Amino acid sequence: MSDSIKHECGVALLRLRKPLQYYIDKYDTPAYAISKMYLLMQKQHNRGQDGVGIANIKVGMSPGYRYISRYRTIDPRPIEDIFGKVTKKFKKAQREGGENYYNADWLRKNYAYTGELWLGHLRYGTHGKNTIESCHPFLRQNNWRSRNLVVAGNFNMTNVDELFNKLVDLGQHPKERADTVTVMEKIGHFLDDENQQIFQKYKDQCSNEEITRLIEEELDLQRVLERSCKDFDGGYTMAGLVGFGSSFVARDPAGIRPAYYYTDDEVVVVASEKPAIKTALDCKYEDIREIKPGHALIINKDGDFKEQKFIEPVEKKSCSFERIYFSRGTDPNIYHERRRLGELLVPQVLKSTNSDLKNTVFSYIPSTAETSFLGLMGGLDDYLISRRKDFILDEKPNADSLEDLLSFKLRVEKLVLKDAKLRTFITDDAHRDDLVAHVYDTTYEVVKKGADTLVVIDDSIVRGTTLEKSILTLLDKLDPKKIVIVSSAPQIRFPDCYGIDMSKMKEFVAFRAVLALLDESGKQYLLDEIFDKCLASVGDPGQPNYVKELYEPFTYEEVSAKITDIVRPPRMNAELEVVYQTVENLHKACPNHLGDWYFTGDYPTPGGNRVVNRSFINFMKGVEIRAY
Image (tube, rainbow, N blue to C red):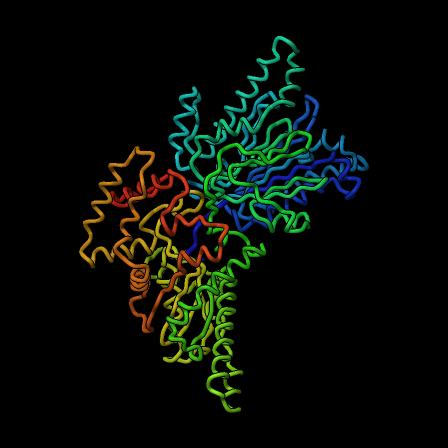
């Protein structure tokens, strides 16, 4: 994605199913769990670089010993910072303990991060300041073990104000309106209530110490989630640890945010991406399962687990951007889906180049688009095989023409490279724009000047500013006849409110294109009409997405053509065309991940429609705030 955006966070949960001494004896180290957690998080570093946090719980500790530990950091290298601190503790234990370093009981009593239950989080901040207080996991503390709660998640809620008001109605006094705080307090409230119900059940029959043990045996996390999550509107993978050692990972009813798990006799592991689990546990891909939408993987204090429904699932709308861009492409399914996205672009590319492949050079930008590029090249190879077959059968070529035909190869070049060391720190606007244009570099003298068409594939085009201010200017200096920019994702038309930092309407180049088309066609009145509809719908929980009406007067191709006009630099000489993947082909490539609201405006929750309408109201009022 040449236009940088921030997006989903990542979670990692690890439960050792046997006592710590088992792992010390088998693997000759007490650091088995921390090494697995490091791999789980390092292999998901793509999901968060603003901050990292980990928490650890020791199961079954006697009173008087610390049993919950947590580190959070916003260091520039947060994963290395966190695990470096934990490693120092283990080195200190080894230095001071001697043979006791291999004694699980001694370690657990004297050193942190020697527990059986782990939770890690990688943060991409979608709004607000990047402070350590914003980093997960969040901790809700209490002197009763069964009321302690540690929460981390990959989520955004569209109805934060509603959730905040419900907490106030319950008598609470939340310190913030942020969805992270309201979510934790909502779960915490019903965790407290569950504790209280069990206490009332036994208060006339048992001592308080006995009741504490009974609460830990009988506490029903499924019921806690049923009661606390029923009002959530958003996409979420929510992970939580309870102080006595039980835990959960809950997934939203539409399956918007991803969650996968693996179990064997030694561990239960959950992560946002399959490759992290595969690398950390060296397991088979087919043994990694997906947590079903509306279900939670609940692990009790003994390490037994069950996948349980806590909210009624709806039509599955897993985020397709996970497949296009966000998740690591080492997942075999994602790899093949991205290749398929490239293959399906072949007819559009042939049309844009007039099928003149002899005078076409193919490339990609950025590196994340490489897999789709390989798919495009594979699709074009198949096209050439078909054309060669037809030519040989129909034209009966002689030896010379047959040699020319069989020796023809597609021209592939590395045209655009990013200079990661260049920093655009100059404050003068004119000179800053000049520096922006040089963030990328190019390979010269591989293009036939005035004759070649350049086809460059990108995995998505959000704002178009990088194209306009850098890439197109750079490519134009190669003197091609034409430049075709191909997006393997469809036109991004609507805000996301479930995890991606895309909430302001005017930032989308597709939306700016529609504004220009409305102006040119004399249909600007539609802006006021839709603005009035959006204003009238405020407070209506069942409101439709009125902003979709802005796009209805224009074809997909008309919007693409106007985007081409918008991103074209003022002094560009080459002909330019911007080509987008179609939504229909997106669904063909990713048939099990049909979440496409940023392309179609078809939001999977009612809150999505409220957000897009509010975002349009903000645009019309000139208000520069996010809409949720």
